[in-house]
Amino acid sequence: MPVDHYENFPVASLLVPARLRRPIEVIYRFARSADDLADEGDAGPEQRLQALAAYRAELDLIGAGEMPETALFRDLAGVISEFSLPLQLFRDLLDAFAQDVVKKRYADYPELLDYCRRSANPVGRLVLHLFGRTEPEHLEQSDCICTALQLINFWQDVAVDWEKERVYIPQTDFPHFRVGEAEIAAGRVTPAWSALMDFEIDRATALMRRGLPLVHALPGRLGWEIRLTIQGGLRILERIRRVRGDVFTQRPKLGARDWLVIAVRTFGM
Image (cartoon, rainbow, N blue to C red):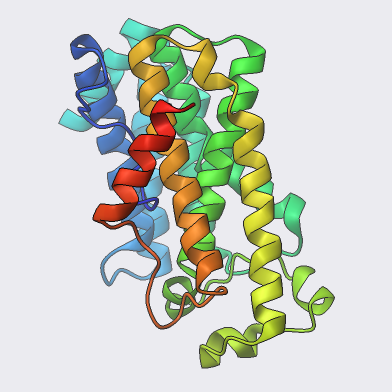
């Protein structure tokens, strides 16, 4: 379970009830393809924004009760209708992807959280809607988990994002630890850089722990799916901390031994 892109979306997992696998797969295709429009290939910013606008127009057709033009959105329309999914959650995802095209820095942590609210949280909320578990406390716990996963992806991919001219570490955090983007550019791990990364790791860990009660409130299969996702994310954070924030020489990722640790911890939750 890589904690990046939309791979933490429980696509066709055996832990997901059979009746929900196709709806989840359709939502995943929407999110993955829209994210790719914003982030993959050689298109320029204007082309990317135009492609995302075309997606938004398809959502507008669904909202107006009209037939979308493409097969993906016709499938999506059926899922939205069957499960009464809020259209705004899909629009939020598109807004976040469009923001990625034009915004490369985040002034402070609240601004970054606002991005996560649209880029990550809709995924968890859509899953909860599919399962019919939309109590406010569950939605809030899901938001904590999804935002934590997004932050983990950011800390894991500092070097990868730098190549795309993006920095997701809040700008106000750099002077506090007396480091700057020069450390990222040089791939330089200093005690100050390690302290900054520890601080960001602690933030993501705290959010994840705030979301933990959700696993005990949801049906068995979904609860186990979320347990695995949480433990995978926490394990990535441990790996980043173990290398003192050195995400430059090798991207921290999960290996075979990590999966054993994740399995043990999952059954202990």
